[in-house]
Length: 98
View (cartoon, rainbow, N blue to C red):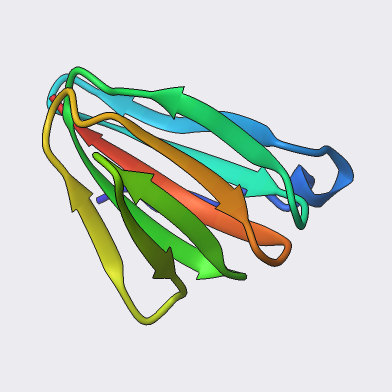
């Protein structure tokens, strides 16, 4: 068993990402974005899950738009092009499955 504490200092920085756990089969990354901040189009080599802890964020995945809150989880396949914009101040978890 491992208990991993969320990072509480992320709100001091804008568009801040920090890996909180790295294992052979997955990585856990916590991302904080201020309202209206954007992460430009990119892709990941791994399958990914996006879990919003607080806030609201707009993802555009392969030209399809979805707005995420803490009520949904977004799954993306490897190499799907995507970008995101924080609609509100947002804290999310990115889980990369290797």
